[in-house]
Each structure stands twice: as C-alpha cells, then as structure tokens.
Length: 313
Figure: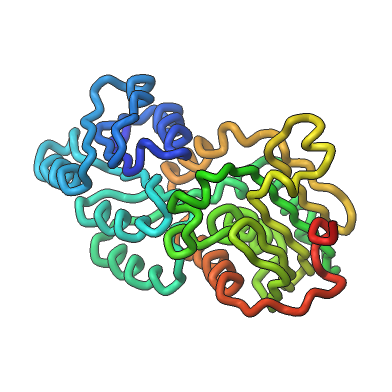
C-alpha cells in the first residue's frame, strides 16, 4: 500500500530529488511547505498537493490528517529545509505521528542527536537520513574489496563544487546555519570515509576560510588528506577546459576511485532502502557529524607536507 508523504522545504535545491524518489517508489505526496512560493515543480508530480508558505499552517494541516482517516494521514515527512532547521522539523514530524527522511546533515551539532533519540523512543517513530554514497554501486564494490585488507591505506579526497556570490549571502554561507564548508558540502564524503575505513583516530586542519578547507584525518585503516572548496578557481585545468563546474576525486594508495557517474537515482535507492526497513538512522549519521564538528572547531595546525597539493598553487 502506498505511503503518504509531506515535504518541508519543497522550494529548495535538493527537493526535486526527494519528489522524484517519492514518485519512483510509488508513494503519494499530500502536503508541502516552503516560505518561498516558487514551487510550480509540484505540478510535475501531482495537482493535489496542499501547499503552505507558513510552517504553522502546515503543522496544523498534518495534525488534522493525523486525527482523520488512516488512509489520509502522513506516514513520512521528507525534510529539505536549511541545515539549522533540520532537528526542529524532525521534532515536528515525530509529533504528528510520522517517520522522517531528512537531508544531510541530519543536525549540525552532535549533542542535538540526544533529544531526537529521546523523541524517537517516546513516539515510536524513526528518523532516517540521506547517506546516498553508501548506496552507490561502485562504492559498495570498493567497500567489499577493502574488507579483508589489513594494511593502513593512504587516501586523498578532493571535492570542488563551484558556487557563485549568492552562496555566501544565503544561509549556506553562514557557519551557524550551514555548519560551514566541512559540514555543508563535505559531510557525505566524511561519512563515506568513516564507512570505508573505520572510526576517527585524530584530525588536523591546515587551512580554513569561507570557501575552502584542507586537513588530515587518521582513521582506523587509512590516513586521509582532504581538500574541499566552493571556489571555481580551485578547479583543475582539465575541468575548466571541459566546462565542468564540479570535480570530485578519491584516491586509495594512489589509485583513482571512479564514481563520477551513477548519481542520478541515489535518492530513490535511499528511499527504497528506508521503506524496506534498511534506512540510515541516527546511529549511522552520528560519526560524521561528530567529525565535522571537530573539524569546524579545530585550531589551525602549522602547514606541513600533508597540506593538499591544490593549496600549493
């Protein structure tokens, strides 16, 4: 039987992937909210979605549905709102009797998990998050190939995703609202590294500004040099020559891990796993949030040979 969904932040950048995933998994979208009303995309999926620009009216509508017929109540709330609102919107969803599928990062600060876990226990509903790299076919193969290795790997992560001046003006450019570069654009990759190579043993941060960060992480089974940037000037010349605006690279022991393709349906795969009872919950999300918090609050270490090569230009 199809599940009923509502979505918070339907006017945002990532919302179309959630809308597509809801449709691809054969479920119904009944309600949506966003303070901005440029949400004509809803008509691509249904002409019957109740839309609100005020969270209070949306909350009231979901509560009315909860008290009505079982066939009309909301089973899942998808959360695509700004990062700093995620935990508040998770609490709203639990209060109206729904489970949650929340975009990354589930929270900005790790201590926010504690209250959410208490609410899960009180309501008997669950909070899931989107860790889509864990369902990427090539990265699953990589994890399987690493299972029996006893050596400590040398890993280099580079992720550059070009953003214009709007980025720093928006909530994404405000550390208290987005968590900064490490959390906003890096959390998926840090989760991936923890998933592949085990828990964090130590960190160093070598460089940090509003647009880029660089550092070193020691994991159980890997030493990782990493570089993150939203500045188009940091793109390699090969990317600039081919007019590519994003560059992502992970090397393990000098070998490039190819996973540039296969991103289009990862949200749908996450939804499929969640609906099948195999979703990624708070315990899955916690390690990467703890890591990005430590990176965000770390003192800048003296630059040395571990500084990412792109910072030596």
